[in-house]
Length: 107
Image 1: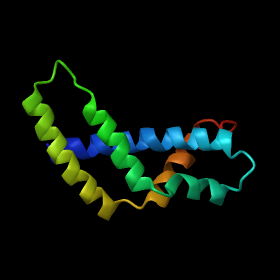
Image 2: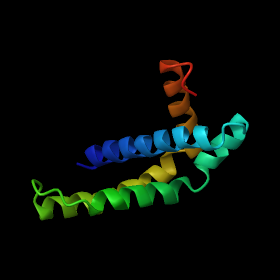
Image 3: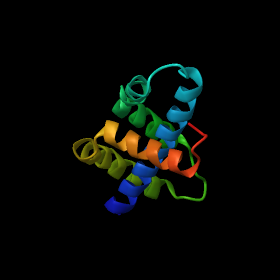
Image 4: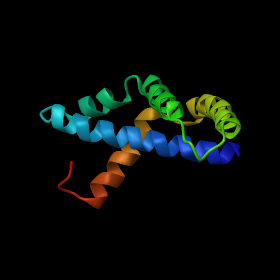
């Protein structure tokens, strides 16, 4: 179950980063690539924890509360592990490269 939660958390991190990349591209169009990367990676862990907290607050009626609570407890532990395994700047750069490869005109 920990691996499933880890994959879910990473996918949520990817969603968050993509949103920040596109928002940052619109807001900071004239800044350099390094400045844009810094704007996204600064506060990465706080942003991810806030993003995941909002996800946890959604009450999914079709999932029993006991299952949701177990998943939420595991999620806290998974984020602690990710903090030791994931380098935000590298993670964001990989997502940016992937998005750019898919559509060279997009970013």
